[in-house]
Image 1 (cartoon, rainbow, N blue to C red):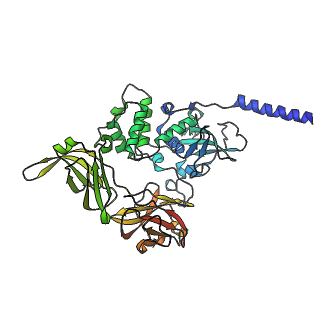
Image 2 (cartoon, helix red, strand yellow):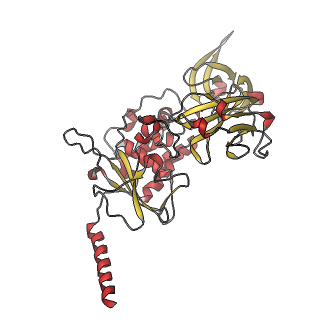
Image 3 (tube, rainbow, N blue to C red):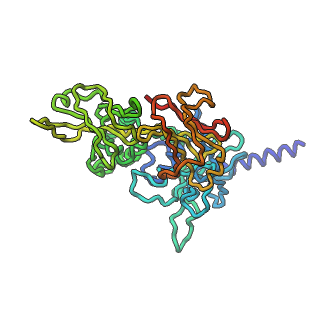
Length: 467
């Protein structure tokens, strides 16, 4: 018995020593300072992961409840047949994440309503970058099957395809890096948000001499919500500390963001489906010199709806313009003449009016529900993962409008409801198809939409319509 125990101890010691002396080591990425040699699309994928994990005080990394690292974002089991990584610890499996060819709309497979999340468009086709994503970037995870902890994380990429040496299916060890949980924690600071004041604070935190003109250009190029990611990419450029200033790579912004000047102009929901205009903190010297607000229908058509001459630094105005997505305000100078006023240069502009975000439909990751506004009326919109048979998944499903979150499920507002199978197809949105139905009820604060699988089995409800 003692001899068997001694042999067992010897074998365990030998295994431990083989792990120590045979362990593979890769350069470690500890903070955003270390990301300057990393290709931009690899950073986007790492940003995606960082914003779908939680990190405790002991730097243990766990997937968020809405993220399945075994299937989401092109994930699949990684066999490590190239012997790139160490032998698996007991109870763990390797997974590789990031193959957007698994997205239904990027291959020739029949469309299916997959319950797995696809690699989002900001990784596949980022708005702020002009480079082509070759789909080579990958993240390798060592996932503990017992407690779901992500024990190790690696950023890597496939070899570039070479017709003489076709190794593009293998990962390049020279482009493989171990990820410190502290880097993931830091990247979480750059999660999507349209809070411009928070963007300024994040900019100031890194003290890299990035001015408001550059933030304006980031917002214009990346969009308000993705601006934190644009800031991250700019900071990484600055970390290179090259002789040329990255700021010179920016063209002069076509317009300025009002919030960067601490000026607030906004479009909000008014009475009977009309748009209200509000403003505050407009500097007095603009008022004295002549300032007005133009209500514009969207960034592209730039059709002027109404203009309001400002007599005070703050106030509100009820318009007769139907509320619509894309409406926004532009603060302009103007010059008064004897018989008419002339609109002069633009000072800044506010954000587009947007309906509240869509919410996922429980147990159906391929679908989301949104309450949105069109010409002042409440409308339902379904976002469907690119698939053809989605109506057969919801044969008896319906969506109804409710006056408030407190209403019982069978007490929907003014009998405004519709079968999902009767929704009409709308414009595609990134990786989703959309299907819509408009009610005869104007938008008002508190309204919400709810999705029923059948009967009164609720699977989703939108947030109440904002004030």
